[in-house]
Length: 83
Image 1 (cartoon, helix red, strand yellow):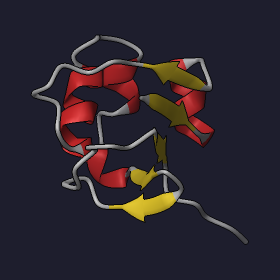
Image 2 (cartoon, rainbow, N blue to C red):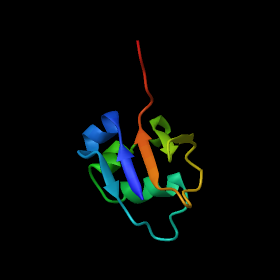
Image 3 (cartoon, rainbow, N blue to C red):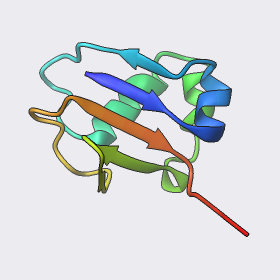
Image 4 (cartoon, helix red, strand yellow):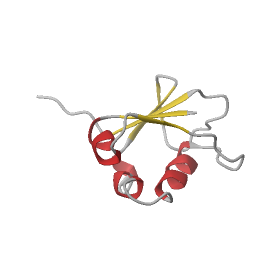
């Protein structure tokens, strides 16, 4: 699965995306975030406040408890603000 990072999340992690083949017990966005956070810094820093993150599965906004089954891309980004 392609995990794309945007805005501050991308800055902290230091890359645009990762390609990761998750173990079968990784089934939801929450599971992905926990898995990535366990990789240590900078992931643990980028995902320290999961409630402040937003997610999209194959370009559709999704809540963190949604299944990642048959998904090609997960995008992770902080809330968008404007002015």
